[in-house]
Length: 335
Image (tube, rainbow, N blue to C red):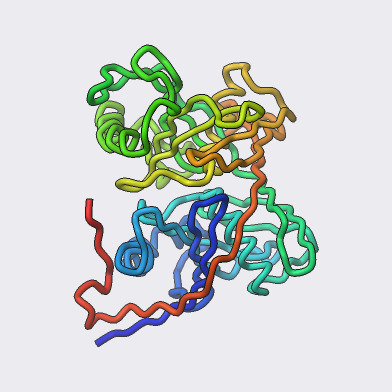
C-alpha cells in the first residue's frame, strides 16, 4: 500500500490556521503556478483532502505548499490548499507562510526585508520586519483587484431579497452590506452566517453563470467566498466582516483577499482614497491594515493595487502520514 509522509509547520494568522507543507511536495508540471495549480487539482488533490479534512485537519483548515520559483529573480512559489479547494490566492495564507518560512529557515530572501512570491493568481511582492528570529509583521502587495458587478440581487433563506456586489481580490467575493433585510454582521451568529452563505453562494452562481471570470485567467471564476459586513468591535476600526469559505467555515482572520476585494469595492464607489488605511476586523476582532497603494487597470476594467499587513504565530510541528491502508486516508467532512 502507498504511504506518504509530509512534514508540516502549523501556524495561525490573526486566528486562522495555516499549515505549511515544508516536506513532501509533489512534482508538478507547468510553466507557471496557474498551470501547476491545475496539475495539482487533476492528480494530487488527495494531498489537499488528506491534510486539510478530518481526521488530520478540520473545517477551517488552510495551508500552503512551498515550491521552487519559475523566475530566478523570485524567491519562491506557493500553492494554496484549504478545505474549500486550491485557491488562486490567499492573503492570510501568505502572511502565515512567510512568517513560518522565515522563522524556520525554509527560505532565504535574495533581498533582506523583501520577498517576491509566485502565486497562481500572479506575482506578489512582500515586505516584512524581523526582530531576531521573530517575524513581527508581513505586508503583501496583492494582485490587481476590482469591482466586478454591483447591485445584484439574490434570495436568502429567512432574510428575503439581498442586494450585493461582487469584487475580486485574488478570489471572487459576494459582498453583502447592511441593508433593509440584513442589519449587519454584528447582529448575527457565526452559525446563522454559515447557514445563509451555504444557500446564497450557490444561488448566486446559478443565477449569474459565466459572469465572474478573471479577464486574464479563465481558471479563476465564480463566487467562491461570501463577505458579510457590519459594525466593528473596536470603534477605531474601519469595518468588520464575516467571510464564509469552503462548506462551513468562517475566516477567523480579516481575510487578505477579502480585504483586497472590499477595498476595491469601496474605492470604486468613492468611499476609500489612495493611501488611506482601511483597518479591517475579522469576526473575532483580529485586524489587518489594508491600503489602496495605487490605481491600475485589469484588461479594460478599473482596478487597484492593494496592500495588506498582518501577523502570524507558529503553533507547532507536524509529521503527517497519509497511508492508503487507512480507510480515511484522504479525509472526510461531516456537513
